[in-house]
Length: 224
Image 1 (cartoon, rainbow, N blue to C red):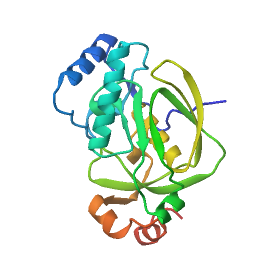
Image 2 (image 1 turned 60 degrees about the vertical axis):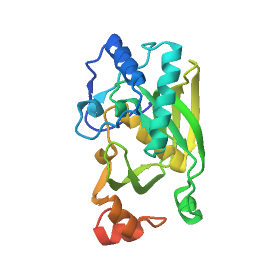
Image 3 (image 1 turned 90 degrees about the horizontal axis):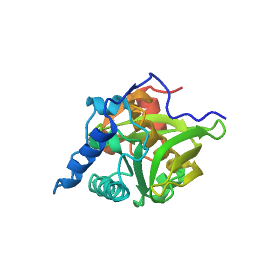
Image 4 (image 1 turned 45 degrees about the vertical axis):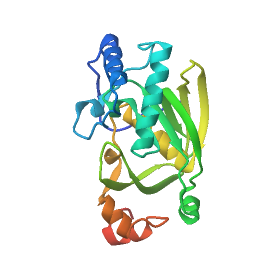
């Protein structure tokens, strides 16, 4: 059974060593203000993040996860990976409890996702069913594009307490899992996107914010 952390061009491994990662996290935690989210073009977003193997002590790890959650809520978003804060470490936080109109929730199979953190995640498809929807990224500010992703995936990861987990996700939750895991391997959603669907947030809200992508697909000319 093969687990697929990402696909596409191979990403170069981070140059950071364990001490540099710990120092970078400590500097981030010492800041009074929330850190800025790294934007596309920064090399850290295109690197293979270092697997977590104890670079931080338990208190530092807990504090870093809490800070990541604060940044995610402030953005706001439904996930945030450590590289998005400039830290090349295989760690991400996920949570989706926003109110969505019932029609969109039904079309996207979007259900609430309680907060959790994933360390060294890998996912694999469950079946062959896919779904295409608009999505955005906090590191590609101001834009959204249609991405076709696996509808059902198995995620293997380690919890902050060190416990190995295998968990199945479907629908929008599976999309979040894939998006955040991709970040840890140097892959942005634009690498998988239908570029003819690319829209600013304003144009998306004005024209393409319906439950599905059918009208956008016909008008913008992407996907058969």
